[in-house]
Amino acid sequence: MPETKEKRYKWRREDYRENTKGLLMVNTGDGKGKTTASIGLMVRAAGRGLKCCMVQFMKSKTDRYGEHESLEKLGIEVHTMGAGFTWDTKDQDLDIATSRETWGLCVAKMRSGEYELLVFDEIVYVLDYKFLELDEVLNEIKSVRKAHAHLHIVMSGRNAPQKLIDAADLVTEMKEVKHPFHAGIYAQQGIEF
Image 1 (cartoon, rainbow, N blue to C red):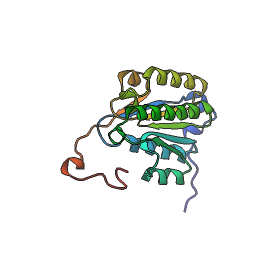
Image 2: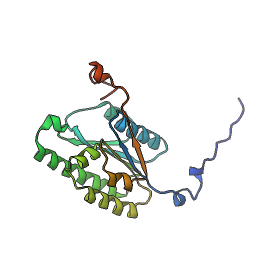
Image 3: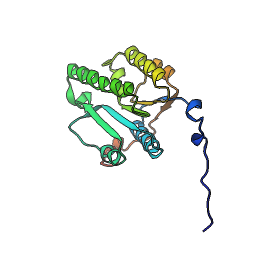
């Protein structure tokens, strides 16, 4: 077998960090795949040695999902903080309190300087429902990005407000073309959860 030389990619250059910056990314839209895309990005980042953490806003803290099993095997922190989806809780005061508590954890993770990629899963729903103030969230992110210029942040959920889209560096909209739920096929383990 011929000897192969290790390829030298741009990210391995000594000046790599000086010529890059952390990105604010948003995965939004009505289609399936917003969380899945965020998880895929964390898998890639962890493979490159970046320290990653995912904070989930709406999924119930008492449930375990497939992503928990996979990400923990990769050494990625996962904090599921929700009380359940709004159609499960039917308690707006609880949802607001849970959102504030979860945002507090996000702020602590951002300010810590310990991470290179943070995923705030389902935060866009929380912003759309006005459980958190959009300006407060954007101002905190702007402040953190000045202090930690290489921190990447991913935010997911439907109905991203235009102000968030404008602030982001990368926005991906998932569009539903066809979904098995409409044919009477319910959520399946390993696919939806």
